[in-house]
Image (tube, rainbow over all chains, first blue to last red; front, side):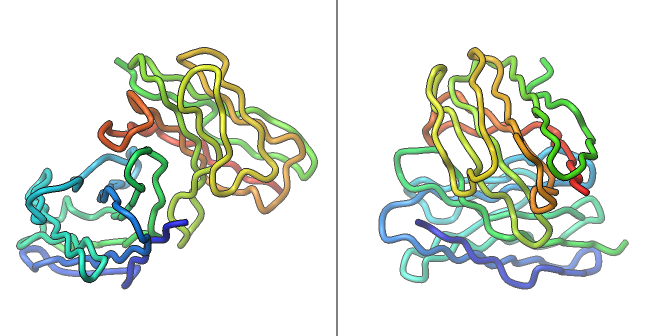
Length: 113
Length: 114
């Protein structure tokens, strides 16, 4: 079974700072990769996804992620965060062929105005 | 469109009691999923239904049963609740059981078992 690791569970940073959240997965085959976000009191929603092609993926709200196959990583970045980016961020993986997501433990990000 | 709805939003049970969590989607999706979210654990798949009439176990199915009542509805039942089942439960749906289709999540049910 695949597993997903996210480090630095709690992240606190000031507005305009850059954000990078790490995600590593263990799975021997081809995978699909996702980042989900859960804003306070809201549903989980998809931030971005990677299936194939350009390993640098751009998502909503200025977020991007880079797939590095050799490192089994899919790190999320945003050059300049805003207070409204305060949320919990989850990395998720599915093996090619189905939609049964395996989630990491999440990163709680707090942006201080 | 309401998307994915879940009832109830909150529930407190005593150990040994039973209850059913309801989930419905109005997007004509074929696939539906139940996850639980525990602090510091992320979301874990309990059961899924790839299509109407089929259900399968996920990562953590013990203590739960599911019913895909029709294409719209997918319920999760706790027959004899245990404190270890205290969690937030999320239902999700997608057009098909393929990662090419985005999963849409409901608002969650916060369950406490005392």
